Length: 180
Image (cartoon, rainbow, N blue to C red; front, side, top):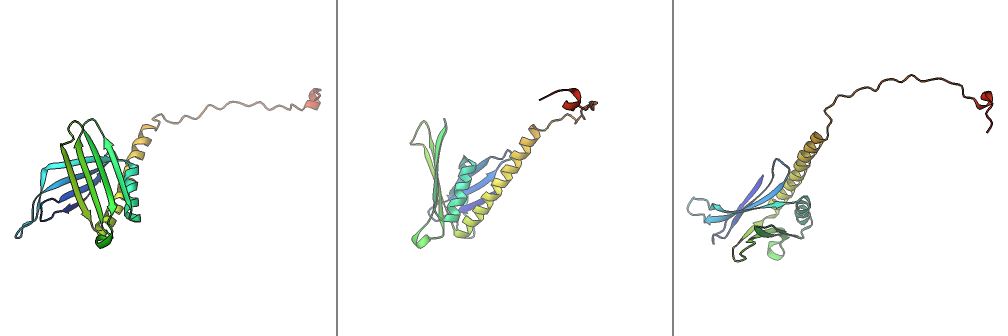
């Protein structure tokens, strides 16, 4: 798991994490900032104000591509409970080299019930994220390959087929009188 905490003085910051579970599925999580940093105390984040989204292999690939090519990727997920929209975008101008990671989680039944998260990532953090996302892909493939090969391995021992005696004949058509 890789985690970035991005607090700010306005207490509108967020933390985000990326991980692969033991079934090889990908997830990104967000957590809202609860307090600002003050006199020797770090900012705090609200464990009761978080959101989780599942990502696909191609979405992970899109995030890696966005970081390496300094472009933008977007995604949209809809389930019976919520709609999730997310994007990772390279910044320009004064913030060139950094990235904006955003997501909005909206209740499917009540669109006014929505949570938005924003986590700016510096160039160094984005490169660490790209490497971790690559690791996640490889880890997922390893898990899925292991599970697949385990399901498709025969448990029977190999049995050597019985030897069949073979006849040796001289079926020379000229000797048998066959004409072709």
